[in-house]
Image (cartoon, rainbow, N blue to C red):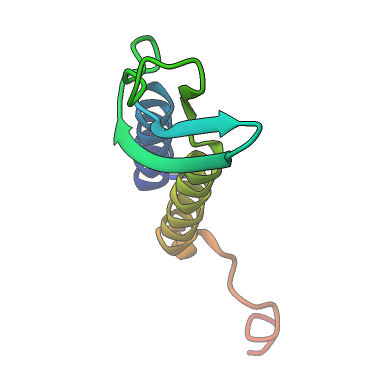
Length: 102
């Protein structure tokens, strides 16, 4: 692994960590008679989630795990693609067919 690839991997880990520290949240509403709903809301620090829309017992907030996993997946795809693109091809050995001739 060359220096450029290491930088890409380190940046990807840093971005993934930041995405995990400041995840996307959803407002939830769950009532037996009315039903269940989820509305995307803002990003917030994992230690201090956003307040529910209402103070009632049926309202809440939770991490939007689907969106967070999708974001991590995109980071891994982009970092993997960049790491493959930045591969150092100059270290490959020359083909053996051209060396045996005089």
